[in-house]
Image (cartoon, rainbow, N blue to C red; front, side, top):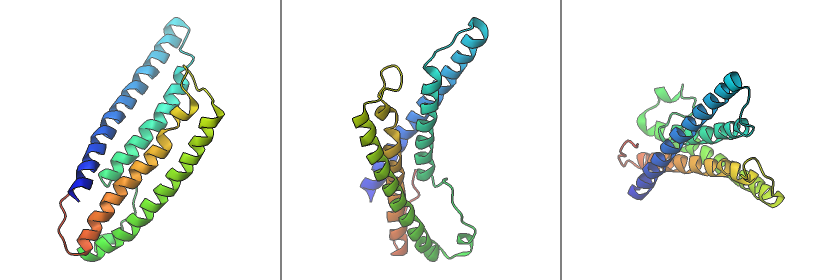
Length: 167
């Protein structure tokens, strides 16, 4: 379990750094576009496309971070009234469902990415389309990994072993 937690924290740090990088790049490119358009009457032709793809990258990095911190979208109205042991069991089932769903979505995204790779499309600035879309399967698999770590923690909770709060 310590290996999974260590790996989870490692991915968390990378995701956080990437999210800061993506958000900074989006702000910088957006500001540059506004300045160039309003004051110089021109703009960067490729910037809008890059910004749109950075939104996708930032979204998946943020979703992975939210999953690690257990701040993802959840419905927990009933779990507030459950005992800790029953709450772990309920979280086991929802965690298992979420993990399996993310793995299937990641697999479908991987298949789509392979199709994009064979088509050989170019986005802008020589960036291949498949490179711009690589975050989709990677993001789903990262989210699945974070759910899996929490699933193992809840399993240990059901078995009566104490777990330490992550992150």
